[in-house]
Amino acid sequence: MSDRMLHGLDFGLDRNGRMRGINEVEQGLACNCECPECGSPLVARKGAVRVHHFAHRGATCTTGAETALHRMAKQIVADERRLVQPGEDTPTVFRDAALPDEMYWPGWRPDVVLWSESMTVHVEVTVTHRCGPEKLDEIVRKGIPTIELDLSTAYRPKRLGWTIEQLTDRLVHDPGIRRWLHLPERATVPAQPAGFPEPQTPTKTPAPTGRASTSRIYAPFDGTLLVFDPWYGLVPRDPGARAQLTKELQKPRSEEN
Image 1 (cartoon, rainbow, N blue to C red):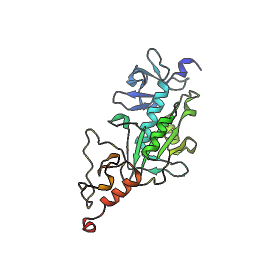
Image 2 (cartoon, rainbow, N blue to C red):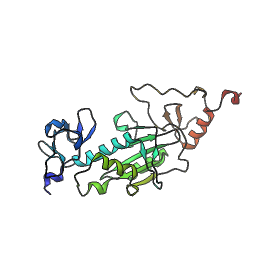
Image 3 (tube, rainbow, N blue to C red):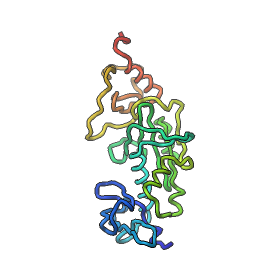
Image 4 (cartoon, one colour):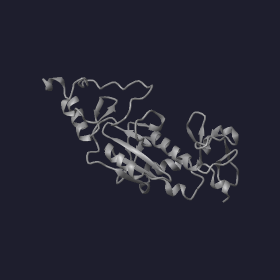
């Protein structure tokens, strides 16, 4: 296989900021895609002999394939909103997802955030670079369950020919690529993602009916590190304290008097 093929991309970035598979676009420059790493125009090569792939129109960057695989994987996880957790057999279905690198997000950013009524999970996608010690320490400090999806074996052979369907199946189901980077004892506390910042433009999710106002002051949490929760506002970052607070907020007013 030539160096040109080794630097080919399975996925390209369209003009709307979405990653695309080779089968989703027209041939040649009509694909209207660019390299997600260097921004150069891509050519969709769909010949009868070679594996279909994206190629740089001009000079070829050496990290475009890695970036394309990483970015497409994040997009798929966020779009699918379902994932087999390590040690389980069937996918957990999540209510919503977010890509923190596409919004304001203070501090360390996970690749994908998934959440449901019962839990929040952060996802890290590994292509060539695993989480370093400092990032792992931060993951533990945040106390949020974090899964690593390791695609290094898919990238290192520089294998061309991945389709969106193949990558989706691997990300959602393959038990060999997933492990817990962190799984706290109490992994199913708040209904919304702890530390999830308020979006810049979307309307704020209304608080569920029947829940008490969040304007009350909770003295036990004075001086505690706080994070933003879309339903409750500022809540303790510590999972145990956060669970206690949300339990208090869910009590009817009649129980407080």
